[in-house]
Image (tube, rainbow, N blue to C red; front, side):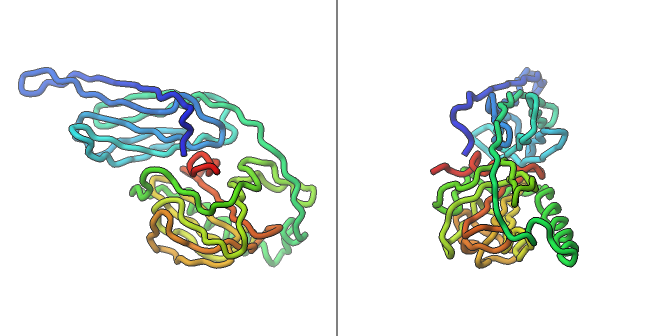
Length: 285
């Protein structure tokens, strides 16, 4: 759920068009939050009064094509955009539709990320040589999934919480495994007893459903337009690659597979390949 404390910035761009001998004003309006935290997701909405089928968003040097939908006599398009955890300056979103274009600036708010000490089996800190080929293959597969930008948009409206449990490990923390800095937490850990149903946060297509060395039984859902959610350490997988799922549909059960200290769900969200805090999208407890 995008923060409601953000003041909406409105930008209207008007062009003069000659049609049937009369002057008509075509407009493009960008609705974007005025500010956003490092590591958060930003929802941007564009309204145009031209009957154009597509709007292109430009963000972090990447272009995202979003189809427009009818809204009375206007057309609208939405996109989710990532604010990197290390974003150090204000970010600019540009929207283009035909000859119409507009920009809005999002002020980046810095976040002090926590540090977490975790004790696990040594094989999960320094994997044996025979496991490295598997680990490298799984990392490549995961990277391909989170960097894919599917043109279709499957997600609609607000995202849902996958399990009811509270957060036990926040997003963005420096993770010290057995005293060694090994990673930054690119998701959130949600409390859940073994066997608790896990539900899809939004409509999507199953990109990955398999066991992985570190993540255990894992599912990746492609929600379209570069938005991908991931669910790790599951005890059971209830979906298969290529399957379409609905928001709230059960995709598996909470477990303790992979590099864990106990049963829980690790939930991740990547947008355009950038990890963001899932709690900037799903409802908080």
